[in-house]
Picture 1 (spheres, rainbow, N blue to C red):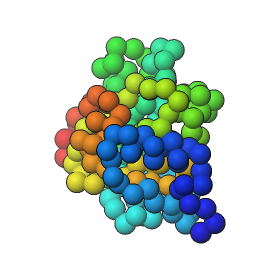
Picture 2: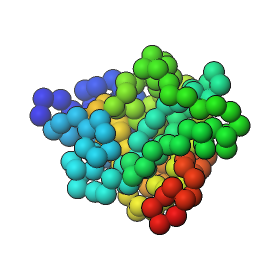
Picture 3: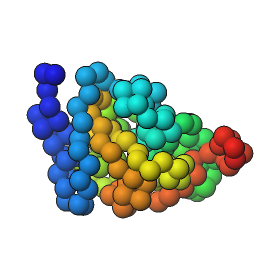
Length: 167
């Protein structure tokens, strides 16, 4: 390993945000980048649904963060309608401006300013949830309840119930 979580500025900001909210999950620096939920799940030996993908969208002109289970995709039409607008994929510049992080390593916290956040209720199906920690090679463990508390996020289904396996 050539780096550690404490050596990267975005990861330091994530750690500070976690500490400020009393979260004790250890940030782990992985050997390889885990830019997809499948890669993260494989590296950690956990179900893909236990990976919290941090996806930035736009709702109107505002960036919003959707923390979604790696087991499915956000239905932008469904979620946008639930949120009262049109949900579109944010540009890499919007992601960086809103979060201070780059796509592939966006954490749920550690942003320059609060970002309105929605937390996929499917993450509650897992006792431990893993989220990115500001860099594509970093993750930290948390729970659905803690993730919601840390982010001030609103729990929401991100796809129609029929679209969920067993739903």
